Amino acid sequence: MSRPPLQAHAGAQATPDAGDWARTPERSNMLVLRFFCWLALTCGRRVVRLILPAVSFYFLLFSPSQRRHIKRYLRRTVGEERMSWHDGYRLIHAFASVVLDRVYFLRGRHDLFTFDVKGAPALDAEVAAGRGAFLIGAHVGSFEAVGASRYTSDAPDQLRLAMLMYPDNAQQINSVLEAISEPRFRPEVIALGRPEAMLRLRDWLDAGGMAGLLADRTLPKSDETAGQRGDSVELPFLGQAACFNDGPFRLAALLRRKVFFMAGLYLGGSHYEVRFEPLADFSRGTPGAERETQIRAALETYVARLEALCREHPHNWFNFHDFWLEDAT
Image: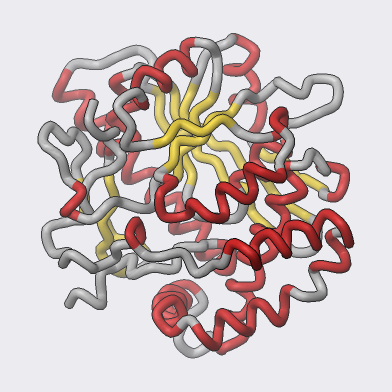
């Protein structure tokens, strides 16, 4: 398989650079990243959090492109009349907090956090039965918090979670975090765009593991390949049409798995709220026409839940690119 289904193009109206998050260079420096990781592990979370306001203000002031996209998003969630510069700051500060907390999650310091978990029984039933499933989320809050919330000292392996991701646009931070993490707390990663991705995913699910995907980004049209199975679908999202790819749901239908919506919301301080909600059930298998209807319904349900989540917690969505392709028009 040349490229997994969830890496479909962003839509016919995209230009080569429109919304091209996959090729956007990292706004990071290896030495700075290593210094902050060292500081986090040496001085502790409470001390390092004192630096986050300055970091947040820096990116708010010196990232004009991201600031423009953030402003457009907040207009749709907070509202033009209520929105202020402080909303942009809150969003960036929440993102900086989540990135910092990744260090502690990957070191197994779950004792530093409190988790309010909702909707876990349905997922626990799948785990107990040894059936793999898809956990589909978005760039909302913290993916690491999802796994950490299910960790206990008595059953550290109760949720075997692999992340399906496109890692090439965040190589620096991923390499640093991998270097400082402890192997038993590091989630399995199945890299998208690799020839062996589908086989690894199938084996992982067959062994009872969960596969996590963030389905609120699509690759630009230039990354399309022959035989691409995922389709880009325009759906209303926060008051304007946006492109979403149905590839993750086609993948779940192909492998006959259940799908859950997941979110690890950052609520400030050291508190996270983790949500699991049943989204679709492809485990029984359906004929072609019925399967297409089921895939479309699952995608529409996913987008509706993401929209509701963004309105409920507007400072938790970390998609700092041209999501609605407004620059292209």
